Image 1 (cartoon, one colour):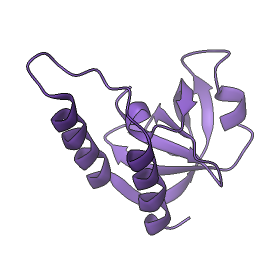
Image 2 (cartoon, helix red, strand yellow; image 1 turned 90 degrees about the vertical axis):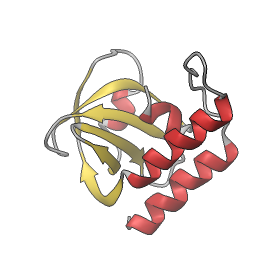
Image 3 (cartoon, helix red, strand yellow; image 1 turned 180 degrees about the vertical axis):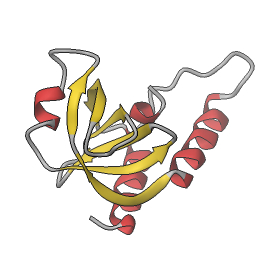
Image 4 (cartoon, one colour; image 1 turned 135 degrees about the vertical axis):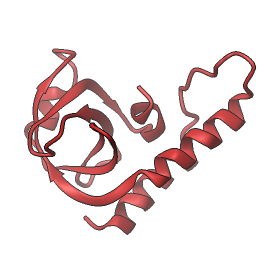
Length: 117
């Protein structure tokens, strides 16, 4: 996977999903989503292979992510946005090493929702 592939995959999610984002009081949903989307797009990295080694939420999507090819496609500090190769699916994980990440547990086709979870 190349960076342009990650951008396209995330942009597709942004274009087709109405993100399930909680809007803080006093903010307009559309403006809030626009700001968060810009932040996500700025956090896209050159994809690196990733390995999910543990999870916070058991019995969620952990088994799937530990048994397929996973790419880290965005990063902010210790937070990584993961995606499954060839599938429009995203999950949030954290850690300092992309080969030893702890997954939050759930995943979806909504990149922004996962990024902000």
